[in-house]
Structures are given as C-alpha cells and as structure tokens.
Amino acid sequence: MSVKDELQKAHNQLDKLRHKLTAANRAEALDVSARVEQDIKKLNKKITSLKQKQGKQLGAKGEQIS
Image (cartoon, rainbow, N blue to C red; front, side):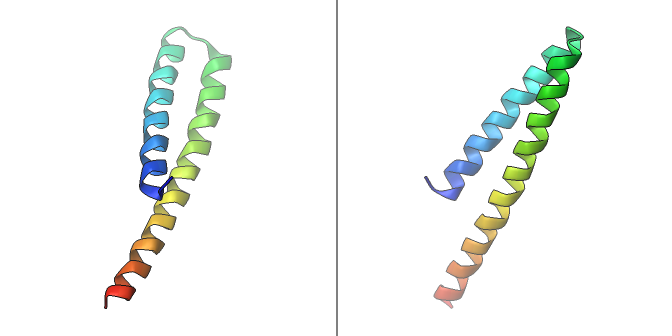
C-alpha cells in the first residue's frame, strides 16, 4: 500500500472516530469518550508520521528529477 493510500485510510478512520466522539459526548458516555480521544491522538501521530514520510519521498523524487 502506498503512503498516499495509507494517509487517506488514516484520514477516513480519523473522521469516523470524530463522529464517534461526538456521539459519545452527546450520550455522556465518558468511558467511551476517553477511549476515542486516545485513539484520535494515536491516529494523529500516525498521520503526522505518514506526512513526513510522504514529504521525504517527494523530496527524494524531486532530487532524482533534477
């Protein structure tokens, strides 16, 4: 799977988690909210890592073209 595909998948998961968090907050389910917030933090770290990896690949590709 390419970095671009992984990044898109991670963003889709993040969107689902945000909707889940909103629903949990409305239902006042604190245990679910806390767990989802932790999952969101982990996914944000993964997205940041993937963006850095993608930037490095694009930089390397640009150097090859030059």
